[in-house]
Image (cartoon, rainbow, N blue to C red):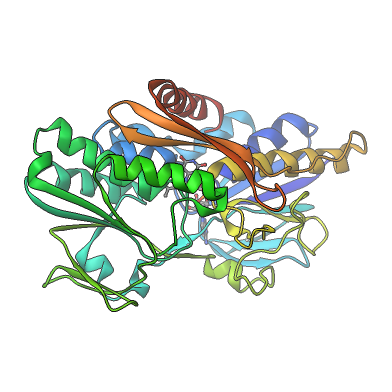
Length: 383
Ligand SMILES: Cc1cc2nc3c(=O)[nH]c(=O)nc-3n(C[C@H](O)[C@H](O)[C@H](O)COP(=O)(O)OP(=O)(O)OC[C@H]3O[C@@H](n4cnc5c(N)ncnc54)[C@H](O)[C@@H]3O)c2cc1C
């Protein structure tokens, strides 16, 4: 029977869901994906834009390329979601579907910290990473402060990788002695959701590179003129260049949809990603999945992609009436770039009880090569 699947958001999760559904649903069925952006992008490469190893133009293939695969693309703002009716308003037009997948990610809200936008630069967006690359290229001496502006942000490894890549860049340019690199984190330790051993391993990688690490420092405001950051613990840090990871929240259209719970994110079944509305799924950063260790599942593309596969398989199963139900098992992996062509590699089961069962492999060129290969695969496979 022909059905329509509407996917809101063509990021890492939405793209994977669209591709997998197009392959598995019968020809007459419609797979429709909506996004406000004209091009897709792969945030895991932004750190290489910052470090000068990638050009931003190469990282943004056009979204409408999906049409060649038989996936319908709507370019526009998702303005309203009605999960009861499995309906959305996109760019003023209403569209309803048999299945609705909400994959709208998380919005950056740096403006909630006074002075942060005016005083700092971020690698969290493609344009931001390019601006930061330019600022780093002309930086010759002084103090660089990397700051996580809230304990919850996209990709728990990213700020640690950023600090290490920045430090390695100064070494490469022969100016390391003239520069201090410090990382002030709102969280109590690196990648705490992966367990204490992984956290200690990443902290070790950072400190081995001579980067000052200051956990439990929640920024209250930034003084762009005086070039200083103030924290809730009364401390203050001066800087010459401030690099920040912005706080996040669910997009407004999602917060107004009735899909979120008290966490502020879309509530889903942790195995099937089903919401409480029949035929409506949430996946990726827009969801919050509580873990027994007390923190939510990290917001990372590796999970968005794996969850997309589960949702796509279960929708295909519901349409065809055959096959086994798929479930998301909490497994994930992540490369941790340390600079000089090396990366660590953490992998394991984040649904582990009582703690996630995640191991961190020591930095080597092999894991860096793994990340480069994965990037190539991603651009070949999904957009
Ligand atoms: C610098 C950086 C490095 C990272 N590195 C890694 C990494 O190495 N490994 C990893 O696993 N993860 C990494 N991540 C995290 C990863 O990018 C995200 O977790 C992932 O993109 C989440 O996928 P998603 O599909 O849920 O959301 P997204 O990929 O963010 O997609 C959401 C989409 O929804 C669209 N959208 C939002 N609101 C609207 C609206 N109202 N109307 C229309 N469209 C809308 C957006 O334009 C976007 O295309 C990194 C993130 C950053 C910022």
